[in-house]
Image: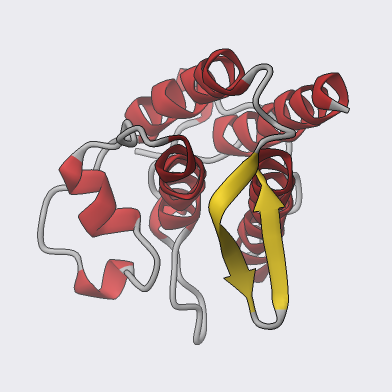
Length: 169
């Protein structure tokens, strides 16, 4: 079961990185219509949510810069941003390194029961593996939000990697 969850985490993260790599800096901040958050926010939130969800349950501090908590934490929005935001490349570096760190820190622990269950309505997550499974699902949810934003602004090709040559000026 552990190997399966870690493999799924790696797969989903590769898709997140592919979505990021197909996003320009300009596109990253689009918020069409009544959208509350941008692609940049969704990518940063994926990074923040994995750490803040998982690490407290093993008694360790998360690995999130304070600025990221303020920009990408639950309930935040680019509409409220006053600080300079990180580049997509910076967010990418955090996203790329996170799964390996999580796997190293949680290997052999996924069957452990958490001291206080994580509650989602009347549903409780009681093991570290259940928390990781939820984090993976949550990442996929935000991938869907990213794709929705891209489609709403008229992006036809969601997956072609952006290169220096095809970045808008």
